Image 1 (tube, one colour):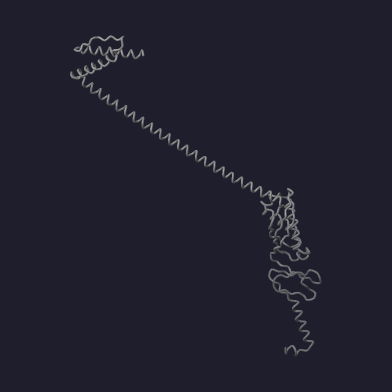
Image 2 (cartoon, helix red, strand yellow):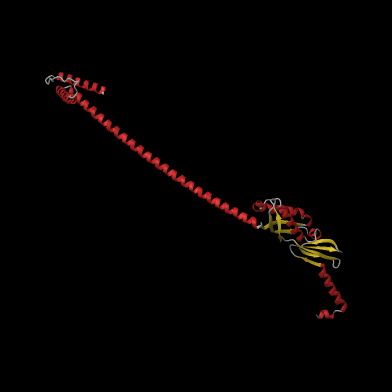
Length: 314
């Protein structure tokens, strides 16, 4: 303060003027921002982040543009689909400034301009789609809107990064119809699942019954096979026993005692046969010659033939 008070008045005012001019000359541009500088009302340069200098009085900062990504709400609006359904749609637009010069001189208010462009593009794209597609192909709809906006906003020096639809609200009548359709679809799916369950249960029961029948048939077959094998074994055993008996008889018949036993057996059978055919008047029984074996054998042969002939006639 002593130094300032000791200065002459002229030098003091000159120092103040120098400080003011120095302050007006130096520019500190923040990161991710850009200053558009005009000289005598005409574009001069664009100052980016860092230290910059301008000429006081003749130069001025005409615009301060942010280079960051910006998000802007797109107001809700009505749009009509290709199948004449009115929808209420809103969204969010994400963009950033690429060229501060174009963003300043290419359009008066680039935020308002890009918002209006997003609304008109949205209406145009929805008019190309049916109601069902607007819900199914929302990503494709967002992509088409971004491409259309970028093509139209090139002179403004901005780039639209993405567009997100927040809500698509159809009329109440359409919502009721959609709800009824979804309810019918849920009922249909439930009925299909129930019928599938019944069909699978019927298949399982049929397969179980089939397996039961197969097992029963296999058990019956095995029983018949075992029974047949048992009968065959019994027949074979009887045949073998008879064969052994005949063999023994044949061996015994060679001897004198064996022949007597054979004659005795034949005589016994002849007597039994006589009793069997005694009632038949057509058969004549001759007196027995007990002492003549040949006569007994001949008589037994005659009786056997008579029985055979009787059997044939019957």
